[in-house]
Structure formats: structure tokens, C-alpha cells
Amino acid sequence: MHTRQGRSDVLAFVGENLRRLRHQAGMSQAALAQASGISRRMIIKLEGGDTNISLSSLDRLAEALGVTFVEVVSDPGAQSRRIDAVAWRGGQPASEAVLLGSVPARSEAQLWRWSLGPGDRYSAEPDPEGWHEMIAVTEGRVLIELAEGPVTVEAGGYAIYSSAQTYAYVNVGDGVARFIRTAVA
Image 1 (cartoon, rainbow, N blue to C red):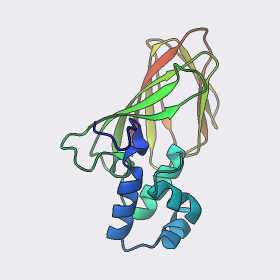
Image 2 (image 1 turned 180 degrees about the vertical axis):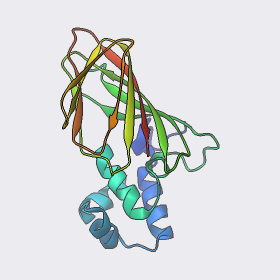
Image 3 (image 1 turned 135 degrees about the horizontal axis):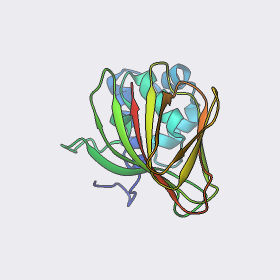
């Protein structure tokens, strides 16, 4: 993946893409702020490449623009569905989420590679209705905290659930936990 300003994460193209997609939609920054629930100040900073933002907030911006998450974060010049970009970093050096790629589905499908250092967690806001996740743990043990109750997945196991609820991933083991996440709408 090519990067802007040396960045190797999903924010490398957010500013450029957000500005382009907002103009294509005929929206002002204030209108996008109103439609997405994200402050105009945050949108200004994003378009200027000066801030960080949660994945769920990027989803809300994409929804307000009528585009997919991948359209907001990916290299607009890329010819491939491969993305290979860091989308989240945790408190532990081994904790990260890498968006590997995306393919068309009813709405969208995303393939991710995640790792969490010992004791680290990722807390998520609910996705829009219709979104589901499939998690396959390849190393360690991951606790998935769901509104409907916690699920612990050991290496070699998996879980499938609606992500239209508050949820979190927690590494409850002593070593690095690694898993593959597929999000589908």
C-alpha cells in the first residue's frame, strides 16, 4: 500500500477520501457533521490529516456519505481489494488490527488480522443493524464481551455473532492472542 506523509495505517487516505467523497455527495462539512453525529471540528481535523478517530466513527461518516468504510480508508489509486493497513493499535506493542481486504457483499465484507497483547482489549460501539462478525482465534484465548453475554474462544475455535451491539475483544491469556475477523453486512 502506498502511504501519504509516511503513514502506514487506514488514516493515510482518510483526509483525501473524506474531502473527495463529501464533495461528490454535495455536502458541506457542517452537513456531514449533522448527518454523521461527528463534530465539524473533527471532520476539519480529519480532512487535514491532523487527528485520530475510532473505527465506529469512520463507519458513521461512511454511512452518512452513502459509501463503504473501505472507500473512506483505502488508497483511491489501488487496483486491488487488498488493503493491508493497520486500523487500530492497543496499549501493548503486540496489539493491532490490520484490515487485510474487502469484497462486495450485500453491502460489504471485510477481512481483518488482529493481535492483542496480554490483558489488552478493544471496545467497540455497535455496528449498524445487519452487520455480523466471525472470529477465528489462531493463537491464545480471546474473551468476546457481548451484550447477550460473554464468549471465550480458544485457539482453533470460533464465534459468530451480530455486531449490532456493544462488544469488546479481551486477551485473557498470558501471551499474545491472534485472530482473524470477518465483518459482513
